[in-house]
Image (cartoon, rainbow, N blue to C red):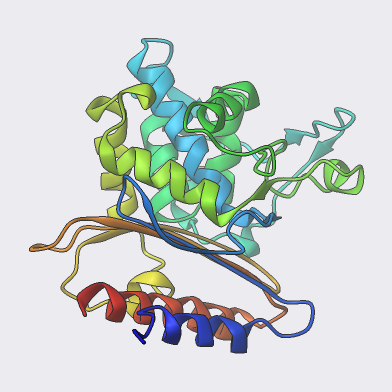
Length: 278
């Protein structure tokens, strides 16, 4: 009897999925799924919502609707999608001092996009969302075939909307579909004009403690993380030099602290790499 190459991965996921915990994995070679487990279960999107947001911005720019060099006023007052009330972000909860340093000044659309992905900047993301619009983000999700379980319906830290039940949710499968389309330079997303610069921004990602931490350091990768207390996600496009590229998407809702959550995602990536190279 042959032994499944995924036995070790399955065992790892079983041990990680304690009471009330959900660990979702989607692994694809850009054209077809190699492994999926709980991949259609919705999770709080956290900062992974910035991936379709930046794709949406680049699509609008490719269509001539936005100028990437256009200046955007950097402010910290936003309107809730629930009732139009104002809210602000806490700079202590952001990982992007560069955008906060421009408060009262300007940053270009391209700078905001880059900081939203590479730095996972919350202020940059909300400013960009105001420029791009939620409907355009939704069109990105529809274009790549995301399920209704994935929805980007509000800005970051819009507490009034959250309390009204307006949420940002993703599945591991849908995040994987977005990243695979980027990796293929999908013409429906705008082809290389959109996908190549998005991948370049993701490759400059400073948060590398999840999927990239489980891969050999020499392997090129481009990833987007997302985390809030008890939640740790990462979706990563991996381009090994002498092997075909692949996408790995891991979403975890476990109640673990940030370090333990990141370590869990890295351990999944490590096991996937072992299977990939066996």
